[in-house]
Amino acid sequence: MIVIQNVGPSSPSRQRRQWVKRLQWGVLLGLMVLIYGSHAPLIALTEVDGHVPFNPSSCVFMIELAKLLISLAALLLTGGLSALHASPSPILVAPYAVPAVLYALNNNLVVLMQAYMDPSSYQVLSNLKIATTALLYSSCLGKRFSPAQWIALTLLMVAGVFHSYSSLNQDDIERTESSPRLHITAWGLFLVLLYCCVSGLAAVYTERVLKSQKLPLSLQNLYLYVFGVAINGLSYFSTVASEKSFLEGYSWAVWAIVAGQASNGLLMSVVLKHGSGITRLFVISCSMLVNAVLSWAILGLQLTPLFLLPVSMIVLAAYIYYS
Image 1 (cartoon, rainbow, N blue to C red):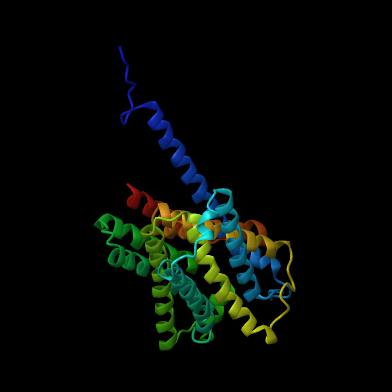
Image 2: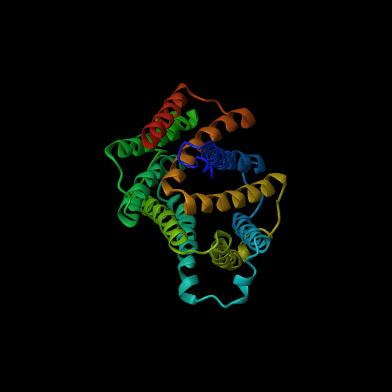
């Protein structure tokens, strides 16, 4: 007599695998939230007399280089070396240049916008990228959101606005009563909308490329970061004459930023390959809360009672969206 064990949906082994998978995703997303949230406090710890002592362009280049080297090591450890022996098709590799160009464009837009608006206005208005990402995700990837999910994403965006406002320095707000310190021009509004659209397009396009090609993720990351290193290297060496030396001002905090952002970029590839770009929005929103708590604990910044409002809104948005 042959006994066939129950391997259906209710089998213990299947439930165990599901719980292990959920635990893995929980750890991955938790790490991303922590790394995202610690980015700004780490930058603040590097400041000397109110200025960062290192070259930001060299830091971005080092982050891209770290991601490239880790991707290459992962490819070797997983036995994917044979994929490097054959010459890749230009048609296969070319799409990976687009995200690098889009992210480089966004980095330049962030700098350019400062001339047409104050940093606080940028901080508030940049939350519109949640809306642009959701709209592009729906139109480009064919994702259909239910009315409840649209409400959840709207809540997420409003929570970001409230958090940005609650984190404004009280001195900044008081100064606006006697002088027009908070300002934004029509050109600045156009640039911030362009920034939000490019940010959403970069995330949506990257997810489409990663999911459309049946290649190992480590190989796809290798293609992505080859272009990232090339573009950011070109950006650094084109301005090297007027900037600090390459590793000048690097401290343990700067190396922590490099390690953290490199890890986060690779973890985000996992989310985009096997998950959803919308999950990325929730990770970024949750990281704002971690950022505020770390800024309070490490830098001594004061949290206002308004801080509890975005916390509640983000929790409610996540519950509505994923239920």
